[in-house]
Image (cartoon, rainbow over all chains, first blue to last red):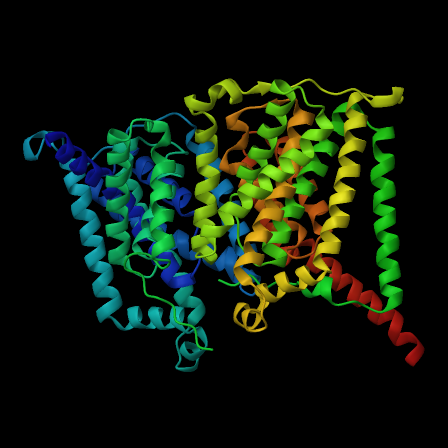
Amino acid sequence: MEILIQQIVSGVATGAIYACMALAIVMIYQAIHHLNFAQGEMAMFSTFVAWQLLAWGVPYWLAFVLTVTLSFAGGLIVERLVFKPIENAPVLSHVVIFIALFAIFNSLAGFIWNFEIKPFPSPFGSGALFGGLMSPHQAGMIAVTLVVLALLYIFFRFTRIGLAMRAAAANPESARLVGIRVGWMTALGWGMASAIGAVAGMMIAPVVFLEPNMMVSILLYGFAGAVLGGLTSPVGAVIGGLAVGIIENLAGTYIPVVGPELKLPVALFVIIAVLVVRPSGLLGRKTVQRV
Amino acid sequence: MAIREEGTAITAKGPVSRLGARNWAGILVVLVLAALPLFLTNFTVFQLTMMLIYVIAILGLNLLTGINGQFSLGHGAFYAIGAYTAAILMEDAGLAYGWTLPAAGIICFVSGFLFGLPALRLEGIYLALATFGLAVAMPQFLKLSVIEPWTGGVQGIVIMKPDAPFGLPLSQDQWLYYFTLVVGLLLYWFAVNLVSSRSGRALMAIRDNPLAARAMGINSALYKSLAFGVSAAFTGIAGALGAIVVQFVAPDSFTFFLSVALFVGLVVGGVGWLPGALVGGAFVVFVPNIAEHFNKALAGAVYGVILILLIYLMPTGAGGLVRKVADFIGRRFRSRPDR
């Protein structure tokens, strides 16, 4: 029983990483209705920027704010520069551009900062909480994820521009007719997703260490969490991310054949099984088609 | 996320003269492909063989995505199944390499069909994630200790390269090239006939309007699963050929990057345009090399930039570009007599 509780708690801790990432994924999905495969690499790049700022002696929270701002601008620029010219191209071509961006960011980060593994500081200090079940950083990470979630909720629910963004995503043509600049809403969505990715990256880096490939598997888990929770629901993304972390940990402990190598396939298998029963995710809105 | 792109190129039968031009272009391409290995080094011939193998795999993916509108980021898994089938049959059962191809095709057809059944419930992004999960799981699955006596675990299996039969004056690489070319042509012929058959029209109807297709009495579930099976069979045969040509299979040759490469090849070639597979195969084999040649440290970035520029140039892949050029020329030629 003690092992079970311990595994669940540490599952929640890793799940918080995935929840962060899943949240960023859901954000961009709200704005552009695609899954961005380059999201993880963009977050990794932002984290390297933060690392560079820290290495130059900038205090942590200032570096944090600067990185989030820079990432917001970066996401906006990527959308304007790369996606604006081909906004009418088919969906699959967009997916290919995501793959291209993935390669570019990964290779650039390796070129600028090389492939050595770097430690990344945590703002929450070290020690033990809850009788050694969780480190302060893990607790801090969960808190940050929840704060981001709350901020997003307020933004989408109570601000004018949040409403405009939702309108632009739900029905671009009608939104344009009532005077919303749909193109800029998409760009804004990219900026916000990039900023949330940066937060996720800076929270994740102290746990997994900083290197250009750190995000590849985390992005996968993030996708899994987002899809499990339902791509239309930020709350679902957080719950989905936490669930993936717990499933992964329990499978690694209790199913005999499953070693660390098979954790990911098992988690994906569980998710596919859930999707077969509930195709739009746990909390996702069902799409109803008019005939 | 409906995938409805340019299926019309295959269904819309142009005027007889255009069809003739198209046939001539096809014959020319085949002749060039047949002549090429006589003038090239063995290594280049090997690369061209790999290109043809990817062409076959992309052709399979195109049948699924382009013709039936189902999205797959996991075809590398079927490629791996095909490759392992060939390797195990050659090493453990002593089967001649030629016979491993139908075996790989059948096994992949069955696994594709079975995977297609639960995938029926999923669409668009959800299907992408499910197939992606398959691709990610495959290398780990191949490393499992339970099946290690057959798969060789992490070490994989080494296969002998076959010689040219009947004392033909060809090097091993040249022989495998021609062997792959013939298999590829047969499969292409099969694919074209499938697309223009009753079943092909059913597949396209499901892609274009699933509801209407079902209302017309098309068994959507059956056809979608069949599309998955046939597509997997193509990719599996490509995998078997790949194993024979590379002479080696190991779990880490079949990571999800392979699936992503096949997908990129599909889009660059043109979704729904079968000859586009040739362009896609060439892209998959040669562009990473070009990028590396350009700058080793920044190879990934160069690759990405080339990819973005290509999509700018032809947002709907090579198929879209070819159609635009053909339309342009067609209009020029036809408008002259009117004046």
